[in-house]
Image 1 (cartoon, rainbow, N blue to C red):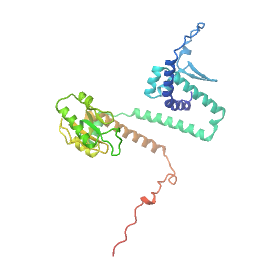
Image 2 (tube, helix red, strand yellow; image 1 turned 135 degrees about the horizontal axis):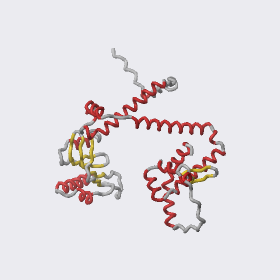
Image 3 (cartoon, one colour; image 1 turned 30 degrees about the vertical axis):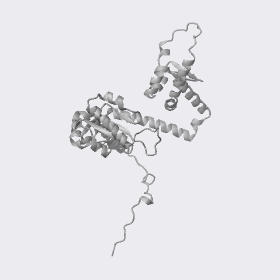
Length: 328
C-alpha cells in the first residue's frame, strides 16, 4: 500500500472510527451473532500465507491489503481509538480502509492522479512525511551527557526559579447578569465558602472528606492533592499569594475575573539539579537539533529570492508618527 494512501486512510479513520466503533457496539448488542454454517475443512495455510506481510485480509477489486498494512494503520491511530479497536474488533478499521481503497481506485480511473493540483498535494504530503521522519531520526541520535547538564544548570539558574507545592481551592463567581440556575456564587458567598473550607482543614478534617463535603461541580473545585508551580507561571496576584506563604499557611482569598482562589502552601524550595535534569536535557537537545539543522542549511547553500521573500512593510497605522516640529 503506497505511503499517500496510508496517510489518507489515517486522517479519515481518525475522525470516523469512533462513530463507526460505537455503531458496531450497538449492532452487536441488538443482534447476537448467528452460528456459522458448517463448511468443508480448509487446507492448512502455508507459513508464507500466514505472515503479516503476505496474509491478505482485504480485497478491493484487483487490489489487496495485507495484515501488516492494517496493523500499521491501527498503530497510527490515537490511543483512545486503538483501545476501542482492541475491545470491539478491527471490522470498522477494515471498512474504512476498504472505503479508502475503493475511492482511490475510482480516482485513478477518473485520472484525478494526473491533475497538476492533486500531483502537488501528493508531492507535498510525501515531502512532509520524509522530512518528519528525517527530523525524528536526527533528534533520536542527539545525546546529552551529565557534564553538559551540570554546566547548563550552573549558567542558567535564573531559568529555574523557586517552586512551591500548593493546595488550591477555587469558588466560581456568578456573573452579574447570570440566571438563577447558572453555576457560581456571589463574591460574598464565595468568601464565606472558602472560609468554611479553611476552617475545616485547620480543624484537622481529612482533605478527601473536605473535598467530598464542599465540592460542587462547576462552582466549588477542591483538589486534595498538592500541585507544583514555579514562580512566575501564574498571574501576578496568584503568584504573590502563593509565594508569600509559609508552609501550612493559608493565603487570603484572591479575586480573579471569574473566581475566588484560596491557597495553602505545602512546601517551597529552589529546584535542584536532579529535579530539573529532564527539562535541561530537553533544552540541550533542542539547541543541538537547531544547530544541526543550521549546519545542514549552510552546507546545502540554500538561496531564497530576496525580493519574493522580503518582509512586508508595516501598515501605515503602525508606522512611526513623524516627529513633531521643533519649537523656535
